[in-house]
Amino acid sequence: MSAHIVRLGSPRLQNEGTRIGTVRRPPRGVAKDRFAADNWYDVWYPDLSPSADLVAKALAAETPKDWAAFERAYRAEMKAPGPARTLDLLAHMSHHADFSVGCYCADEARCHRSILRALLTERGARMA
Image 1 (cartoon, one colour):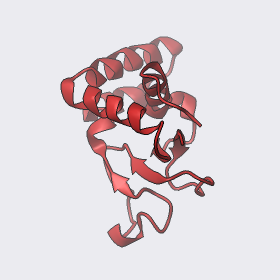
Image 2 (cartoon, rainbow, N blue to C red):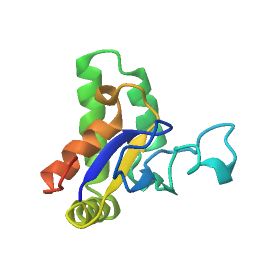
Image 3 (spheres, one colour):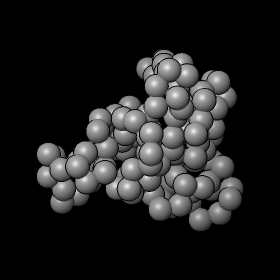
């Protein structure tokens, strides 16, 4: 049992479990009934996505300093009670079930999902 970090829309991994979309918006041009069938996500959970302002900041980040500022701000958002409880829940669940969380970005290193990986690891999650 473990948590996986994935790119939404990519082929599913073996034993990936439920795919959770931690994105601000659903995929454009995809019918709602195709989200799971086309490997986007099984459950949309925008509560773990960066705020709209932070998404803009991440997209505009050109330097390591810019990205570090985004990471600090996103980590601060994830310290709010709701996201923090969700991260604790997911970390605990990773010891008992397979699931994945993801985003659309091509490069995980420049995506909030890399920070979600770190946040879950810091909480003791079993990562794939």
